[in-house]
Image (cartoon, rainbow, N blue to C red; front, side, top):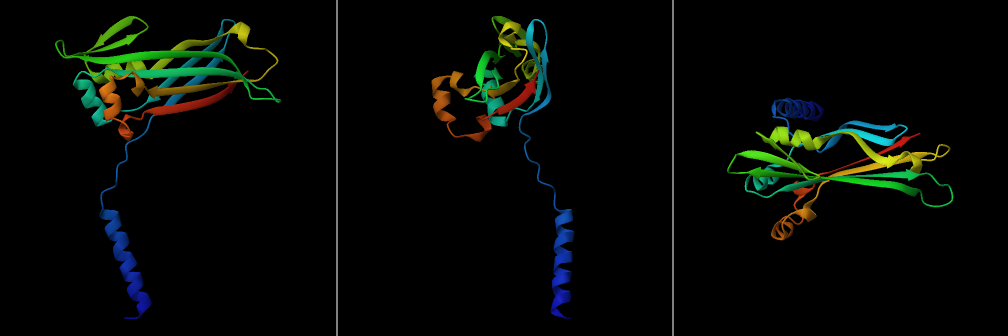
Length: 185
């Protein structure tokens, strides 16, 4: 058998084995499934929905009583040709998700309001979506200028208990971060 045929047969065998090998499943990072900036007479409103799953280590820490803090920060900028763009508004929201072992429920705290959920998926659904969030007053937006919104959504590890902050340093499963930039008029 010529050397070219052997190489061809070897490549065909490797291709067949690769087709039979189970596919590698990668964890999907956080991503926006909805992002909408609305300019009204009241100001600039923001709607968004983020899809993410908690890594196993983060979920285990939550089950052991460590509260998680999710932070959304929105900034509105006005374009300037002569210098850096000017920030005209900034808004932020913080959600606290905690597991209550006595009641076996998850509690989500936002701005002094608490809501209990029977399972983690329902609790996380409440922190993944925002609707009608006013991020800028109408008086801050100039009608003849171009503006854009920058949104950052993350799991804030700086609000965790101090021993946890030291213990999770450099662990990628504790890094949940997604950013979005969108223009509006």
